[in-house]
Image (tube, rainbow, N blue to C red; front, side, top):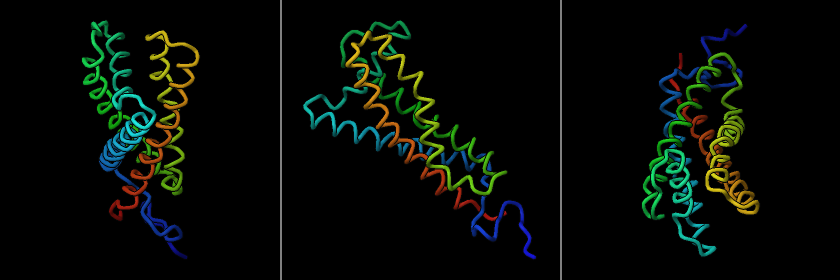
Length: 177
């Protein structure tokens, strides 16, 4: 009879225990990579349809400026705020996901296999309150709001898939216990 040793399942062939620091590290990497890919895809798409590549950063920055009661002023002034927010939030969301998955995976053998689906659901659900602030604060029309949520859904789907894939990859590299 084969024994299972501290998170290593012979039937599965890989280690399922990822320590918290490892989960956070791989979540940060996945969050940054997901944010980069999402932004490159979005900027390419916006440029292709004739809009400025930094439109999304402008919208995010304008939303934050309004929420913080900072004078928005010119659109160009809010772009750095939008970029900063995006690149702080993306890796932070990834780190939280990595930490949570590491804690859950320590108890469940099949968790790494579900990491991509879990990451997509986590990101889509977590992003809704943040995304909802934009149409409210910027007083968007109904069609602009639908467009905002539609594009955001697809972009966050990409982000979540990359985050989940990288955290899954990192969990497979975890040292044997």
